[in-house]
Length: 202
Image (cartoon, helix red, strand yellow):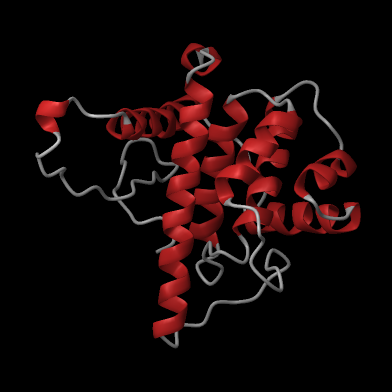
């Protein structure tokens, strides 16, 4: 998509995706604390929260992975599919980093003609190659190997991200006192005919 090639778009996209994932992780962390709802521990869970922020981690992946910008939109699609197929594994602060590096790597392998191997992505992600291999396998099974993203699905996700990114831009002074409307996180089922508003794994 031509808009993604614009050098100003990717930093905004990364900032928005980071913000979105941070909100989802925090919400799921709180839900786990206040309810007895079971959240399965998986290979994606770390023993502690990583010190690096989600935004810094995503910026690191963007800097070193050298994958096409479309990979980040497709990685978002994969994360959405994963959380819908694995409701007992919601995104939280203990698994979001490993899910991110895995989803970007899988999308790069699926989309790009040239991509780095698992050992390289493991170094970028700060984990061992053995763990990266295991994460990839678990992620693929968690997705049911459903990796194809149709142009309509890609456009729907990217349009949503674009719209949300424009809402994050600084408002003119005359609008500062206007109360912004509440926004829900929109995710899309792969049935392009019916786009439904849903909370991403919350």
